[in-house]
Length: 200
Image 1 (cartoon, rainbow, N blue to C red):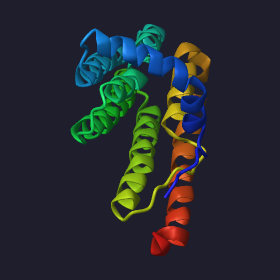
Image 2: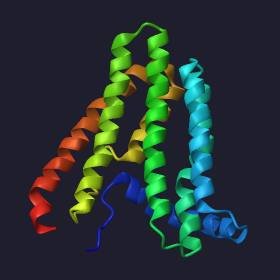
Image 3: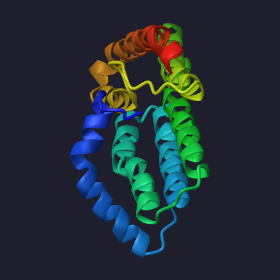
């Protein structure tokens, strides 16, 4: 079944595919392994999470922005090398979830240190919603249904969290948007699955 891009993330990938693909081919010629790019990307997020947890939130956002291209390049390098193994995709998805946990966990740690329990819970609510958005897609995929719907895909969430981190007055409102939007997207995806799973 052909899946047409319907999420913001799909559209961005389509628009930047040529540029990312060219860089990916260049890195492949330099014998850069895609899994190494995935690992370095996670290490960048670890550094950003430490900064966020220490309260250096804007610096954490800057580090995340600097590492953002790595999130797309691992797949581009794999395609350039005609790698057909499935391990890289599993590794990438797993590290994406770890990155989400690190970012929101860093925020939760920061709020705990500030004694802001409500915002700590808000961070965990946003994290849980982000996990469930991906979980619904993964479980539906196991059943043969590709789920590419929802307002709050990973790229949208990442952009929102970066804006919230870069502009301190937007941090808490941004987390509210992320938490509510992520849980709403879970509902959207579950509704889609309910209507289409028997035809998969």
